Structure formats: structure tokens, C-alpha cells
Image (cartoon, rainbow, N blue to C red; front, side, top):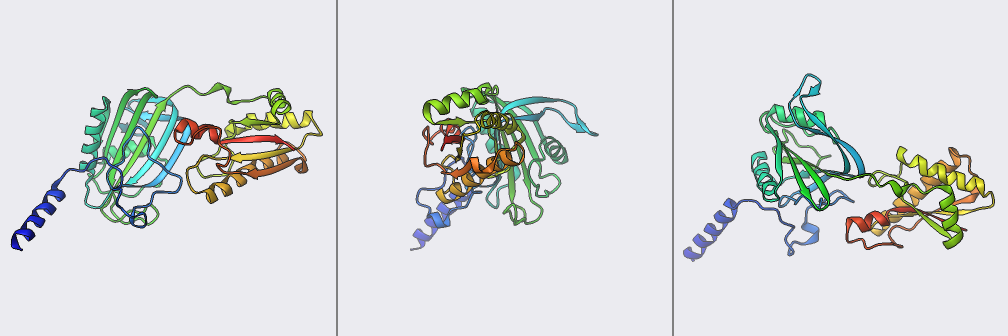
Length: 328
């Protein structure tokens, strides 16, 4: 009996001393007991999750700009930066209790080196905090202790394009229920930027819309933009909205279903609601800003019920996120 107890204690000590690795949740973990990520969030395919971490904040833009810090921040500017454009993903991970910022960053440094990435910048303490906050104040910040800030910037080349990864770890000095973090718990802010040219063929003109509707009864549009889980139309949507208005004004008898489509991230119920409200937002803008009679437009949200590509890849999900005009 004593031998069994000693053996069990030895195993526990070994597990406690083992280094953390980047793995998914254990397959045997009950779903009810598993940590909960922010709804609609997901890991970036080029950055593995720290073991046991959960996603507290998530933002993704298929095409956006990003100011990459490459030097110290003094006064009101950086000594060196570079401007990036491309696919931008921002994540905030809550790291399990008991894991220091040093341990987290050492693991990620090893990971980035193994990927063949090059270190562009590294800082710690208040200097790291000044750099990160000035370069990318995108999410609410949980206050950290002096000396518990760590920042690293990496660059690599992958088949997806040139990749930059910005990692910033801090130890929260107090609990934050909004960020779902306890006192002394480590947070990891991770930005992944994949440089790529803007897709120039997303703007479909009024004539092309008319031709496709005449041929197939519908046209798919990819120039209508929303933030993740939001229904407010982004300013970049205006060129496509103008072309939609031109189509409707050129054909006064045309009546359309404005159909909102999503990918399959999240529940069916939440995506049904989101797609309906997005379709309604498009209709409201065409009516209020472009003077189209509201009886000519019917909003309809169908979530991910009519995909045009598999939802298993980011490319497929991007094709499925669209607005369609369907002739009534």
C-alpha cells in the first residue's frame, strides 16, 4: 500500500514538473467541463494554442492594415515600424493559473524557431508594455505588474504568404470578469498577419449583377463587409451598395430577396439570427441612403443552409460568407 502511495506521488510530481506543450483539449474531457472560448472564435491555423488556454477575445479581418513595431517607443512614436496589409487575426488567450509570462513566451519562442521564423523584436518589462499598447490597442487591457510584460515579434514565410506574429504576455494584477481572468493569471495577446494582395474582383458592377440575375435568377456578392458577429455595415461596403442601387434604379420593376449567408462557425440558431439581421441592415441602407422603395426588397437570413464551398477550410468559409440578390 505504501509503495502504491509513493508511486502515485512520484507520478504527480513528474506531471507537475513536465513542460507545457501546444495541444488540444483531451478527447476524454467532458464538454460541460471544458473551458469555453468566445462564441464564434477559433485558433489561427498558423499559431498553436497553449495547453489549457481559452480564447477571451477574437477579431479577424480578411484584409486590413497593421503597423508592425520594430523598435522602441519613445515620446509619441516608434524608432522603427513597417506597414503591413493582408489577413489580420487578433486573439487574446487566458492561460491556465500558475503559468508565468516567461514560461509562456519561452514555449512560443521555441515554437517559432522550430517553424523557421526569425525574431524581429523582443522586449520585457514596461518597455514591452509601451510598445504593445502603442502599436495595437485593439482590445481592453487587463492591468499587469511591472516586469511581467513580455513582447516578441516574428517573421516567417509559409505557403499562405509572408507571416508576421506579434506575441505579448502579461500577468494580470487583479481579476477581470470581462476578460474572464483571475488575479495573477497570464494573458497572451497574439496577432497574426498574413500578407497578401487585396482581391480586386470582389466589386461586382450593376451591369454584371443584371446579367447574372437574368441568366441564373441570382447573384452572389462578396463586397459587403461586417465585423465578426456584428451587423453594422463597414464603410468598405459602400461601393457594392452603390452598384446595387444602380441596378434597382435601372430596373424599376425589379424586386429582390436580399439573402444573408454565413459560414458554420457557431450554432445554427445564432447564425440564423445574425444572417437575418445582416440582410436587414443591407435593406435598411438601400432604403434610407439610396432611396430604394422598401417594398422592392425582402431580407432573408439562411445562416449556413446553402454553402457554395466546404466549411472545412478558411477559403471555403470565406466563399460561404456572402450576400445574394435573388429575383422575386
